[in-house]
Image (cartoon, rainbow, N blue to C red; front, side, top):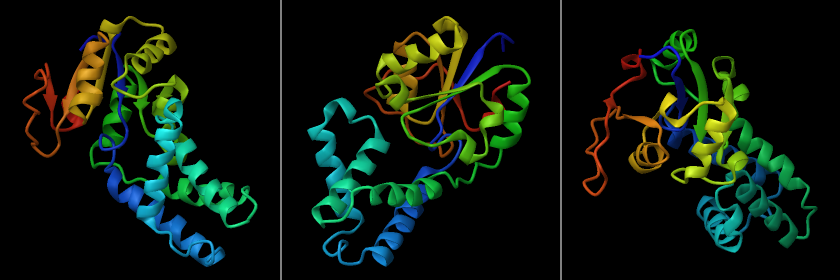
Length: 223
């Protein structure tokens, strides 16, 4: 692999499994809300909050890529509707966000990032709102491009363009690694980047999408 190559990594389900993280974070927030504001939580649960976020995404299409906005706004509306100070949403969101960043890296990730960061410039590129510092992986990355900072989510070309601008390189100099066939592989390829599909669990490639140029099972396969 060319030593000048920039590597960009998706985060959720690429460096760690995201579903247990989100479930734990939502659980921690709901427990906090039920303890601190039990009356407000009558009639609300995990699914009702998700429905509120879906409604807000339709109401604010220009912010639909911003999960921090959607989660915080849903909380603020809940507090306001119950006659409470909407500023309590900050506390509730912090409970969620702290747990959202308590991730368990896949087995090979730490050693692979350490090895690769000594040879290449590494960037994170994610639709999610994980914080590299809170997750404990910031030391390996030169930058972090999110859907929030780019104003668009993968597979939109604008988020990949933001990466190229921050890295100061051409599209052909970047290899993007991610688990999602459409968001990561097709999105990166259509933006002119190289792409590798990280397929940890031998999932079938979607038949309606053009096949990936490269498939890997773990980050150990990147040199």
